[in-house]
Length: 88
Image (cartoon, rainbow, N blue to C red; front, side):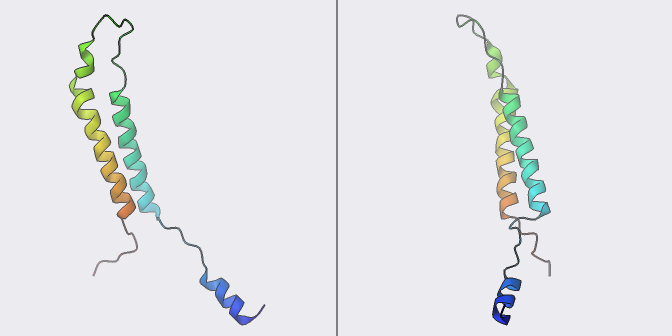
């Protein structure tokens, strides 16, 4: 091989876009989203003629959607996080 080809191969060192810190925040956000959807589930009725007011509980109307939105916010933060940035 020529010198130019060897130098070109050295410059094309593959590096991941995200680092360990990014993935940690991503998994944390996925955990929040999964917990929110788990809390939203259930509360149905087998008989369509019977109304179950449990579907309008605080857990399903306020808490679970808030956890999902917090998880999405954490995911956005994880994507935008730059672990290579150094403080001055």
